[in-house]
Length: 369
Image 1 (cartoon, rainbow, N blue to C red):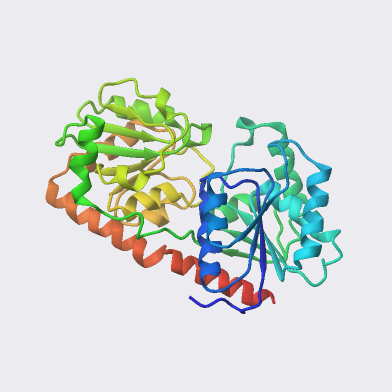
Image 2: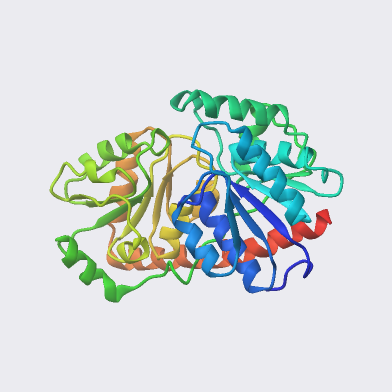
């Protein structure tokens, strides 16, 4: 990969560096650009995060502003303004609402507003803000009000772009850049199937569904569990923060947050996304497909575009339809399942690779400088 311009330095501003979807996409991009010789900086509003060490070990400069989640901070704003003045980035790129707002005003009052393009990032679609706190609701409203400030708004889904138009976003320029999936890390591995199942005490012959998501109203575990309750012969692997509390049946396995998701997916037969709203481009869905799993997903965000003809799309919050689709794919003959596995993997490799994502951002940067 070659960077758009060898001396083009990008400052990425993001809320935190845990292993969420936006954080992983930023990490992939920053690491790829660092490997190609770029000297970018990553600024996290809050301290810590599992990805910080990975970035620093690769030589990416990382700073945090010392904020507490949900607590606006004048000192954090002043730190970011100071970093912009010292680092003198050619482009400032922010990811997610809080970082978008902070980056816009820190750049505006840094003395570098005129010469430094600003990119905002939208990573979700039709959020149900009533399920979240007052700070997030006000932040989204303010982002809509000031959405004319960035030179470009990048979303990771067509659905996200449309949803934000509906809530008042009026960007100067906009573009969709699909997420990139690590197809080397997420890949089929038949040798691991029996090994992982043995570790977890899962019958090697039971069809096994994977669901990878933290417990959050958006992810709608309730509908998933209702659907799986109608499928007693199908096992369920729940991966994500808080899921250890959800395994109420013998063939349901709540593993909580795990760092070996690719290995766990090797034991499964199907990837399911049950989100009720809010998804833009689901990394978990696409990563499961990269691991060779056929997919069932609710019609939220760009799920239908990601899956194509390789799986099933059902309405959100419809447990009966979800159960029917899961049952159809999980219990179909092995020859059909093998064909779907290949189709899923091939689709992600061709359309949603990290290389394609990085190349798209390089085009974005070149268009702004």
